[in-house]
Length: 150
Image (tube, rainbow, N blue to C red; front, side, top):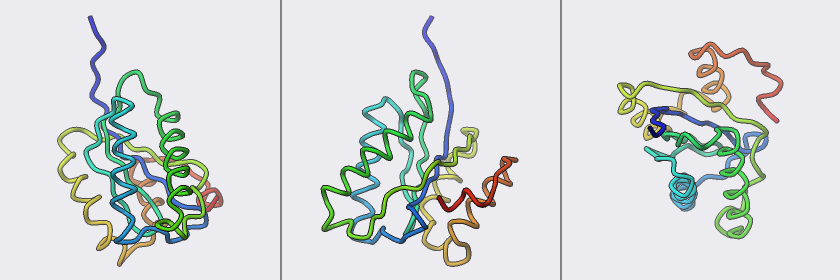
């Protein structure tokens, strides 16, 4: 028998000091690059999005992939790509330490895709830090607010 799983993740991480670096010009380049990393790791990206200073990744995780290693590889490869493409990602300061990851049922997939697509409007009302705190509370994750800015 093979291994079969269905693990739908939303992975969220931001730039150092919440520095805005994503623009209409560069965001799709980064989102597509990250989606390519996911495909190469046999993980299925449903959507990669974000706004100004952070990324949301919604994907199915392949059973051979450990979440923390996947995020480490995404951050490292995307950081290197943005350094190479400095003219397009001029304001990128590096990624924050750590990440948030939340699991969802398949029945919530379409709603979550819309949530990620609607980031620009969502952040007219809420900062990334406020969004992250709300996600932690919604998923009953204990956190120390001082570590949200590293």
